[in-house]
Length: 273
Image (cartoon, rainbow, N blue to C red):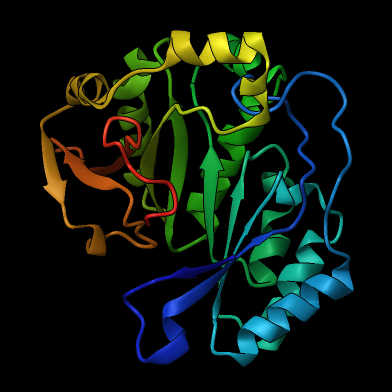
């Protein structure tokens, strides 16, 4: 997928490459994938991935964003980073659940990784086990810390807003504030994504019920977030890797920046970004 970034001009330099490296995922979040073995796995070979990257570079793209599935399940993930760096990509971003990233992040940074977006919906181990059907919260937290230590950019925590986790938003802000004050090269920010039914899990009766029970509107999200401090709107252009679909806020005097996506509340036309 090619994604436009209006900060870059002229010509094709304003585009970046969003690259789904695999459909495989190593967890089964209740809002995303049904429990049990995953079906057919689709992913490009290493040579095909390099061919796509080279084609993107040849038309002026210098930023690649890797998604999945879970891109770090690929054994050649670091090799792909290194190949993109050798081609000439100057920005390489990964969206990951953090299960494995901390185990090889130093090698990944050396190979060209410049930024990470790490999914984490709760700071509570039992809630995390229920939502993800897996026991790995400590791995995700370690990946977040290592990203802030090693990446001199803005690492974003990507959270699906759910009724049962909204009361944790002040704790998330405090968690980010603490890490941001440790003097590490990188800073953290938070992305709050309204829960909307766009994944295979919602095709089942249980998945649909889970969505209906856990969905919350924008006003409820903002009210819960405001318990951490006054919400002051921030220009999205001031956020590294900003997304035009989000509204951005700074929370009180914490210095923590939070992005809110509430597509259902906005009657947002998918594909309109």
